[in-house]
Amino acid sequence: MTVERIVFAVAGSFILISLILYLFHSHYWLWFTAFVGANLFQSSITGFCPMAKILKLIGLKTGKAFD
Image 1 (tube, rainbow, N blue to C red):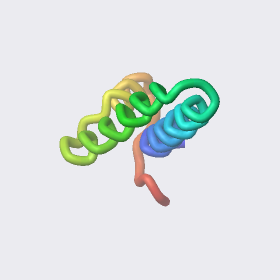
Image 2: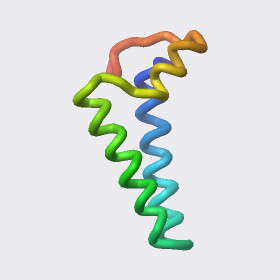
Image 3: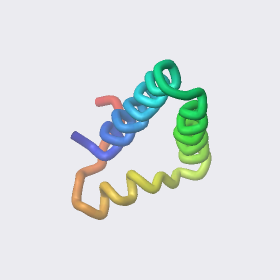
């Protein structure tokens, strides 16, 4: 699995989990959803993603997002 696919999977999981927590716990979880979305947006503009940087440092390979 490549760095890009892991980033997509984690971001998608965070969004889904926070939406479930919003439905069953508190509306404040939508702030976490907004944070993840904002991070994805800034990453698309700047090309910098903190999680991708960490995954590269631990030695995971990079590649095309959709092979």
